[in-house]
Length: 155
Ligand code: MN
Picture (cartoon, rainbow, N blue to C red):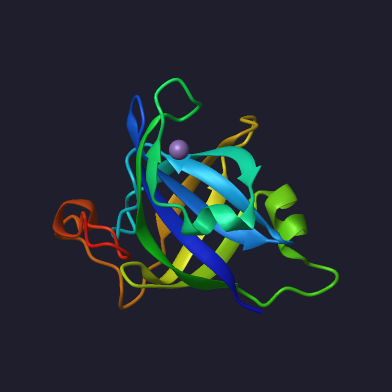
């Protein structure tokens, strides 16, 4: 079963990329300070933050001054994902998140192929976001620099 996948580039007090996956009708969310990398050798810190409403996947615009997360948001990438292997009753995505390892395939406009989120032991909210070794991996270039634009508005 596919779920929604979105990354929102968020120019808050510090720029970060909010990585979100639809799980059980909500958006599980991680703030990735350095953003994703196509290089499998790069382990990008992904700090789990509160779940967001599914509707937030469509949000692009300005969060007003004084509000939490104030700053500009663009939809940097979006599409769908599927967990690897497909979820079962015994091994749901929630259970995998509890265990601290989730592998998945992204079908975004910019990010594709295999990825994984791995929890850092002893750290309650800190995970690593890592590109899998496949035909979409790249050890050269910088997807954040090469493709800075919104996939919705082109901004
Ligand atoms: Mn954010």
